[in-house]
Length: 407
Length: 94
Image (cartoon, rainbow over all chains, first blue to last red; front, side, top):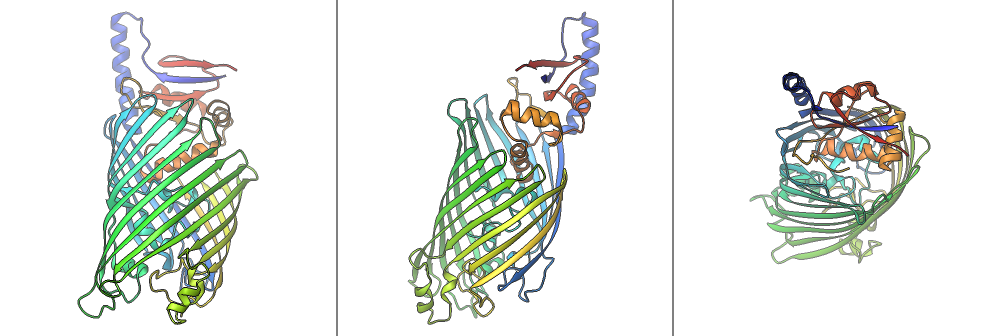
């Protein structure tokens, strides 16, 4: 027998007793309510990662402990409509992104409208990217299918820009017993871009600064009623400006645009899971190399992955991923030819086969392991002017193991 | 299942048992028609991305009933209930 409980003082007592009970009730429950209004959670993780054949994590190719992710978050319910939430993280991923402490999100959540079918929330401040399958918790190890996410979609070189933004986000949810569940997310804002991040995206020779001037993202998810399937459609439109340094910069001022269109699907069964994200992106450069220069490159990427739950603790992972930086030059011949052989053809693509497993040592303590075999280097940094002197292997591999605890 | 407030505007505080607890497994699969790992995923996304507030974890059925009893607007589940004081009870039968 299962029972559903809701607190309420039951009536039909003489007036004096009702008052006594109500007073006692209010005193005791208010204390408990204020405890529930504030929540504190966090995670600690440390791993080892070994990459052979690329500078994905470090330049010397040695076994690395640069796989640290820590986080602490709090949520405070101001009243029934407003809530404050924030999270601080410390990340160290070697060459993958800047290491250090970050304010991951800091927002005011306004529950603007709610009834049996509809919920509308507005988030003001620094919000996360709520649009892709794993984007909102990409740095939270136990929420990911793997330690290294598929780089076609979750490219670590773009992490600091793609992880969230400062601005406003809206989430609109609709539930229906016949049509299922709908979630619509819309966000607009901008991300601060450090000089180091500028070099990661453009080139070590980019001495100027890059600004994120415009960002609009939208996503729509649909889950049929009591179905293991969920389907999504995502749009991204982002503009950047490059201000060249006055002296010594080999580039000039430029406008850069990134547009992406995704579809994704997720199946969650009792033992089997499948997920896939497929996208096409436009990477548009105006000026940059010289006045009047323009380039519109269309890239394509996708992954399919399956997870199998052997039991409630052991989970197996298999994933296949493909990425082409330019859909009209999939084998990279044009890239090699146009660079007069300086950039090898394997910088035009990056394909990855991943196998791995995770094992829950206890309720909140997990170990994860994975191995990647990778062909191509299109998702290594710097992106625009790559470094073939360091990344001189077409095929490279990595393995990683990570221990994680959360509360 | 996605509602966050009662009709009178009071916020709903949800209490749940650990994910391996037999009552939690039974409630998720038979009543919510979801596997516990799916609930964990939804709640982890709420908690670690700032999107919302996840249910509060309590360690035993007795602690769950006690927490619901002492929190305004709370909801939870129980296998049996000796004392119905200060709680509304909805009995679910197959």
